Image 1: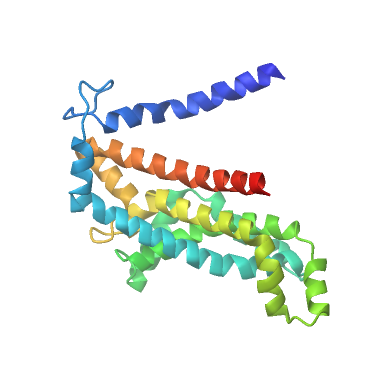
Image 2: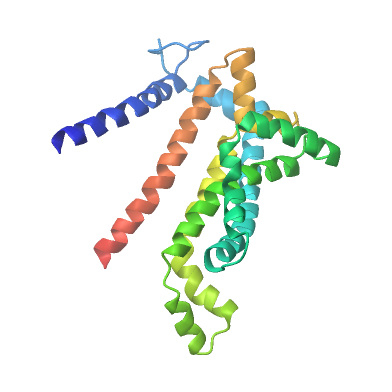
Length: 257
């Protein structure tokens, strides 16, 4: 199986290669995109943190992503329990409807949201972007939560209820702690999906509610601002830490136990 591992390493290297170009470019002092950089410095980082045209879309994306994650979980958790544990007529059709947005191109969805939310006065508002991103995040979160539920042993709930716990109490004391990793994974995917989404944000968000991906798209289209490399580098670092820190904490707990 050595050749399989070597092939896997080549695939990972091919996918990760652009990231190792973005990082050095974020420290470049060149007035335009240039690789390798002629000199290094903090020019672009200072331009990013001192320019409200970049920091405000970043804050908007964080708020919208958090709102999308919360609203997605409020919708997905009850729906997953109902569709996974109950048997009723039309259940298969509802399952299909939950994942239907995955089959529609974002440009088509964005156009529909633009006209629909325009009639409701939600265009160019954070709420409109949150609602649109929630519709796009629900299918992925639903698949994750449903998979976690299918692997859950319901005898644990029955045991808790036999000991006198109400269904709601057994959920918070037994079901939620066991399924918490699945819930966290679904919420994280919803947040990342919202934070990274650009097509729908271009249609729905306005200048006051511009998201970071929309700002990056506009900047690249208008003037190819090198500050984009800083944004890409920061996102890469944050995502890497978000993966490494829980992994290191889990290894420490296992070593201590």
